[in-house]
Image (cartoon, rainbow, N blue to C red):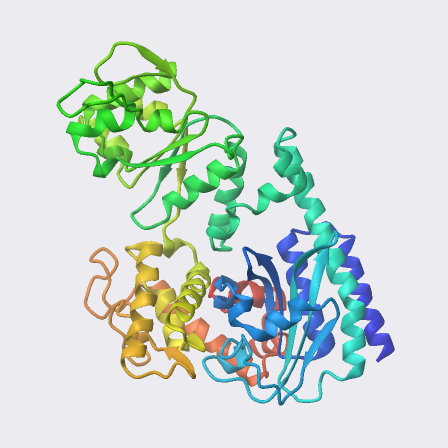
Length: 518
């Protein structure tokens, strides 16, 4: 046993001195701990806004990464946070486990009698979060395991400190003048709002982090429901204007008769009812950022005045010729193809080129892979707390339905689908004290046939005949089901599953991540 412990410690130490992406380092850390303790699941959760956000898990379903565990609702996590030492929960503990139904081997089912332990983590003297371990076999966590976790805690906190230092260095390379970046605080703000780990999202955030430091106009492009406002907030919070206002204007909701007054303000007597001078949204955002949502809906007459602001930094209140200087950064967003609007004479070409100095396409949910499960986990936890449920989970067929559906309404549609399904389960008599599992049939996102999976009826350009699904979806569903059978036959051992499938282990892990199984 001693040599095995030495080997694990050597692996942990090697990762600390190796240059790795911080997400990879933390994932390797929890995987090593799970192997060392021979337990069912290990989770590393970061404390953010009084909630705990999973940043690396091993043995839990992927949607767990989207959840936010509030210690006030989870007494075991609260107990771990309250102590600086290791906290253990015996198999007969009456406290509910926050991971009921979330273990890969017990999806949607209550955890059997088991052992659990955890430890609070601190970095530079400040609370960082918690590390938790669950073992399905009672007696796994004895005195020796207790002492070993206490020793390993040093490695975990060192890994977190290394990660923070790397983030600080990265931030300093981007901006030497931002004190928030130097402390690392700037990196944390706003990141938790954009949930997802797909390559397309992480690459986009990396680009936006760089462009945020400039005062260049940014044009956010994307379908309805992709979360353009969240990305606008991300840009503002990473900019030098973060301590100044971010003013949101929904251009589609501005009638042409009041649009000029709303944006640029007016003076007393400018029109009937203008009894006092009134500043507009540009002045409200002076020194900060103005977010023009659905900018493609602005009337042509207003577009000309907006162009003047972008060119000269000047506005004129309605009813006066006196210009006013404003220092406002513009972030615009649209779900339209503005190039088409220009050709149709609905949008000024010069304004389009001014706004699109840095166009940023936001990927639709269907292109974000397993992010759909991470986001689903986030919405499940919100609804669990809102409805006062002990636990709210997805069944396997529901996970497959979410991954196969095309999501024309994107993240907003996913949020509504989860909320409707949760309410439906409660209205059908689900007991709040039990684990509530949402099946595919409760999601209302398409037709679901036994063995056929979801989304059998898609948009006309996606399906030539009723019941015929795109080959990619059929292939993914078949691979997903076969991988699950191999893992079940291997008792969750990925290396053994790789041997059964005659795959290289690294290729198996890549395939599992693409299919949303990790």
